[in-house]
Image (cartoon, rainbow, N blue to C red; front, side, top):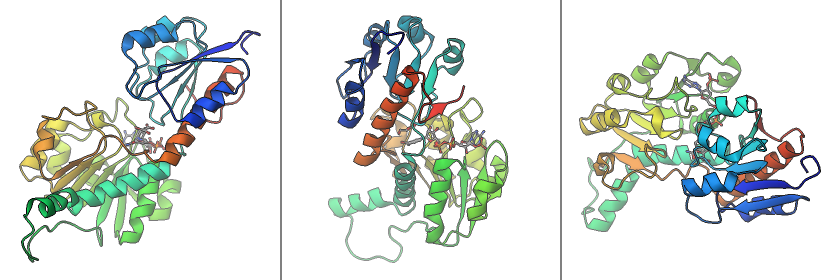
Length: 328
Ligand code: NDP
Ligand code: DGY
């Protein structure tokens, strides 16, 4: 209860039932929900949040000044069912003294697993090969057909050796990777030690890696970081994988690098925009595997994320320590 009154919360989407149950079973919590698989229309979001104490949102909801003003002064907590928080206007949120909850750790394994799956799909050309089986392109076993690149003896460069970056390295190591490189805002000896990973500037990572995996957060510093200069430095035989946010990549530059053989292949779980229009040039390339932002999409992970987001929201509304609060 906030000052003895019921806590009013707005939930911007249909979420796993376990998460909603946490909210509906909490004493004194009145839940209004946009109960749909589709994103809440902006007008409904602005109306729904008005007068609420808590907001449970997703990465597809842009929580900016307009939303905060529509919510009014009662809004005390925003809980996002995601680890990424680039959709939240943190300066505006902080100014208003609103607390923020998010969902780190619980999705790390699922996202790292998907990153490895995407890397293998791109470097061993799995979607292309499956297509060949279906369309009759598979005529016989051919020594030079459908060859790709393997991880054995390779150098892997990780952009952002955070929770997910480390989980990816841990999974890739047993494939016989020879060397791990990483880049970020500074060296992190304690994170890199397990993989004997070397901290290098972005340019060196691009030049020396056989596989580049992007697992950093989207920030002003990382926006557009993988651009023409970056792809030009990469080897012609290298493979690029992005499971962070689409805007870390300049997609036009990536298209040119893939189309002109500057790099061998790419795997993207995230794009700009999302969804990617079905006539987007990247979708015309055989050497680009694109997934619809499914990094954390296991049943168990999404359920755990929803429960954590609900518990963050409730703890914040009660003025208690949140299981995972983003410190602003
Ligand atoms: P962490 O905070 O643990 O890791 C983020 C990493 O980004 C840190 O290692 C940080 O390095 C790095 N980083 C920050 N600035 C830079 C920079 N300028 N250059 C290179 N690296 C930088 O977060 P998680 O690992 O939990 O999640 C990472 C991101 O993955 C999320 O923010 C989200 O956008 C995305 N994600 C995508 C999913 C999907 O479905 N595809 C699922 C889950 C997450 P440093 O500490 O040195 O600053
Ligand atoms: C996140 O949590 O930031 C992902 O993009 C989706 O799980």
